[in-house]
Length: 333
Image (tube, rainbow, N blue to C red):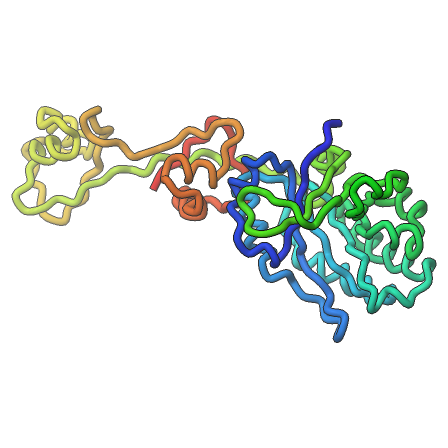
């Protein structure tokens, strides 16, 4: 498999242009979904998780998540797993759910055996809930604080090592975080950069994990809204046909379309249905989805502003997380 370029971000990345990130050649993103504060050991959702999730979904970027743990016991790990399941419910992730283990304040005093049990407790609980899971740690933790060999047999491994040419090359890993000072177009400030050696989207969807347990049906193209006209004082079939259909000679068609005769009286406030307009009348603006499109991309190209992606989805009675498909017709606001 060709090595993929993957980034990971959190609430520290406050300004993100999601389409620019995708256009920069990034193949996937791992979002911090939450963390445990080690003082009171209180689980909390990352403040920008929902925003980043919706933004990257809008540009069809494959997404994974990680949870920063401060668990120093199996019971705390299970509490974190239950919390993560709640905040991930109803979402889909084409990359794994990783357990971030690097908190020295809580994890440092534990033995390798006990800390490995903490990792296994979280991962096993997430697997039982239908998630494709893995463990994140730096080289020191995988060599001295965790049983890397045992964990690598059961879960995917994400290794962090920023030592460039001196970085570890022997520990098994599917994802390798090699710097925290990367630069990516579309993100203000530094960002973590990773190499990915596994086709996670294919593996996860094939295994029906991470919310892919049931096929997500493609939404049906929205039915064209019926065009209507409210009669005003002084109107006639001819006048309405000329103004709304582009041709006064279509007055008989207009009357028939409403099951009326041309000599029937029409009155102010009466609602008439309008047949298809002639080519001289501006039609409702629509766009036919092409391969590689996303709400963000369409909004940027057709509406002049990618940040209008939510407006575009809502205008079509869709959610930004809904799948759009080639040939689908979208109305443009």
